[in-house]
Image (cartoon, rainbow, N blue to C red; front, side):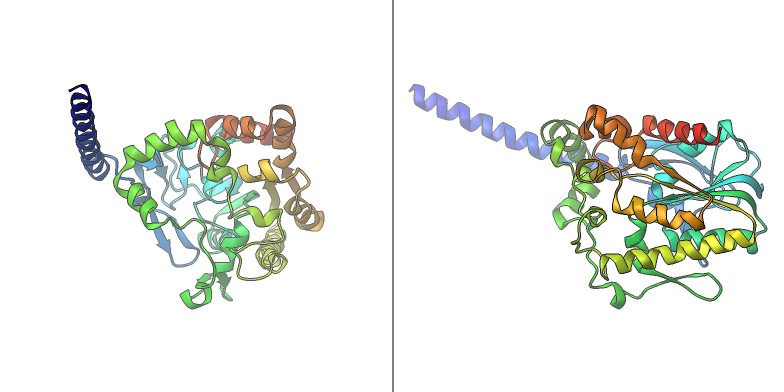
Length: 357
């Protein structure tokens, strides 16, 4: 009799649990589809010259992962403070350019390192957009100056190591317009960011489940195995093997740097100072060293081709030496991501302000 009651209770518990899972999945699906839809993809657009940009005159609440933030742009599709009413301004002392790291995805302008810097040094502008790389940096700066009459006194380029991979997709024509390689030319290049069918299904349709997994399971019990700390996409910077480059590693690096050389020569002709900032990815905190291969490469480049090099490897690896790579990552980056948190943005800005002061 006792065993019979026990079996009945277990059966009832199992049925209740199954119904709970089904109910939770249904609620998750409905909320994900109608209330938690990511709007980030709607803020960008194709640009015929430099591939892509942000839409003009935005004032949107948008999402990056679980972060909701207000994104405003000017008449040229450049990220600005929503309080900035000078949307036609074309003359700036400092022009920042980079990819999503520099754009500051997840944060309104004032909370990004460009925005923090802009409070101290006025007349700054952020030209950065997600998935930019060296080819696009040159094309965009050239286009803004030559075709749109922008004037910059200094350019501060935040070089991301993934620029090397991104630049395998692009070439520049005689008019400095970005040409994207055909699918046939790129088909043998692996995409480490591509999600499996199951991961994409969960990402698109079950955002609460994904958030619970990331914030309460993975980030608590599996922190050391986080993708951001074990990113295959970035391991070419300290390893001689990679599946994500079309060519030999050194050939791919030289190809990407060729666009930096062209940009450097162009800025010299225009008498515009060229500053480059370099920084490690979280994976490099764990596996690389402060005098990384990419640091050596950029130091060599800057001997004759840039006015100053801001090396954030030293700053971040000082922290690693003091508190370890995990605590350094948790302190400055969005957990489970490769982008800066608010503390990280302030850190980058303050170091740059100190250097310029």
